[in-house]
Amino acid sequence: MTDTAPSPFVFHQGTQPLLISMPHAGTYVPPALAARFTEEARQVPDTDWHMDRLYGFARDMGASILVATHSRYVVDLNRPPDGASLYPGQSVTGLCPVDTFDDTPIYAQGDVPGEAEVAARRDAVWAPYHAQLRAELDRIHARHGVAVLWDAHSIRSVLPRFFEGKLPDLNLGTANGESCDPALARELLAIAEAAGGYTAVLNGRFKGGHITRHYGQPGQGVHAVQLEMTQCSYMQESLPFDYLPDVAQRVQPHLERMLRAALAFAHARQAPR
Image 1: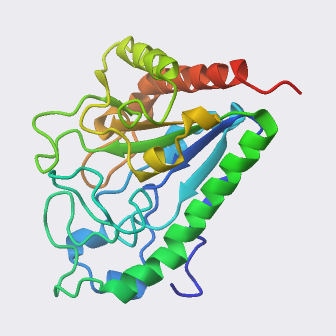
Image 2 (image 1 turned 135 degrees about the vertical axis):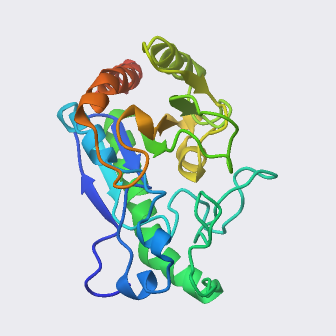
């Protein structure tokens, strides 16, 4: 990473037992790396666009918010540090991806990163993000006796590489029930299913990535949930990937209801002070 590169994350510390993580919201690619990319890859099309804007209301709720600055094409913050597949037997992209969601090459000349380059990116970007995530979860848990981690994602609604047909709009993932209390998962799913005009599923195609699976420890009072949203629920799914305020305003109340339910769940389990 160069001296002009932004910090690996932007962080806002809240007052409530809720941390929202946005690991795929970043768009920054170091110029020397961008020069190796295809023209398509330089557009970073697989970004979880506008997450911070979509969840802008959460700051007023008192949530802590952690937002990535670097593109997932630099290093994917929601993959394990060893690059192990989260969905064995299914098509996935890696820790330092070499192809796009459309299964096209990222590197124009095929000069994909070797082990040393992968390690350097992991140390420069992945490690600081996860150190901040860990520190904030620990702080929240120490203060409140409980913590909820909400991993916020979005994806194009139609991506044949990863799933057939159109993806449900609200995809909740709890690592098949291992990353959060089942009662919280049921309540969140009920809210999502009651959201008029949207479809919902729990632990469908997207069950939660490394962040949800690694940090969710319900037995220790840390409950992690991933929400993978269809991008058509709030933005344009193709270039120029514009945010659509009128569209977003229709889904935001449902997002807020889910986050308020997560906070109510946490408050009910707070350690007495």
